[in-house]
Image 1 (cartoon, helix red, strand yellow):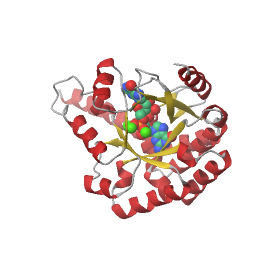
Image 2 (tube, protein in one colour):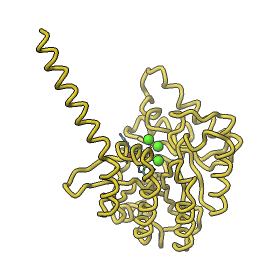
Image 3 (cartoon, helix red, strand yellow):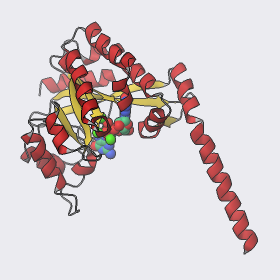
Image 4 (cartoon, helix red, strand yellow):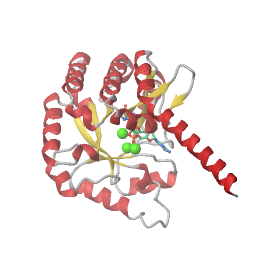
Length: 277
Ligand code: C2E
Ligand code: CA
Ligand code: CA
Ligand code: CA
């Protein structure tokens, strides 16, 4: 039995080592990926529940390595945040959005675009400057850009106030993303002027189930309405979920029931046909 144990232990160690080596090479892969333009952006429509119209979209970054392998943002964004590369990715995303501006903004009255910002993006003058210059460059009303930040960005009140104030100067709107999955306190939310709250998919998924957390979504909606925040429910996959949200007075939704993330040309085509609905 001893040799078997040793062999098994050895194999596990080798697997762990390979895993760690793989992990540690990710930052250098990211660096190469930026240099080789391996990143692109897709857009998921944000839909008005009442009409079915596509009124906005969320920009979501994608990474296809030159060997064809797709790496998801849930994998590489946290690593980029830890390795200090997230700001470079965000700036690349802003450039890619600017390139898609014709499809996204022009002749497309009121259509808004949400962009994800990490905590480090708010602290980086280069990112803030790039956002500001993009808005000016595009010559669109700045409030057609929404910056989405997770609760991590809203951890301490002073930083939050400063970040939100800077966004106000640029004129973009600010949404709190993945609300309820982090640690931000209610009191703090109420004291900062945010524009919108995104309800995470984990809460939308509980609709119609008997799970212990299924009452949470109702409380989040009531709270957001109390604070006069616009609500966007994410990850809507079923008619039952949509019906519940409609009944609760939620106006904007996003999810596979309506559309997966798509490229800018497809987005524009879909949004235009929606205008006739
Ligand atoms: P998120 O900001 O919460 O984005 C929503 C995620 O839910 C997206 O995953 C989207 O594709 C997915 N999704 C939308 N509708 C549905 C649905 O009906 N069902 C299911 N199962 N999933 C749905 P994605 O694109 O893989 O992005 C994952 C996360 O990576 C994002 O979560 C966001 O935190 C981060 N991320 C993506 N793009 C960027 C970016 O450009 N910058 C930063 N900082 N983070 C980004
Ligand atoms: Ca988001
Ligand atoms: Ca989210
Ligand atoms: Ca998320």
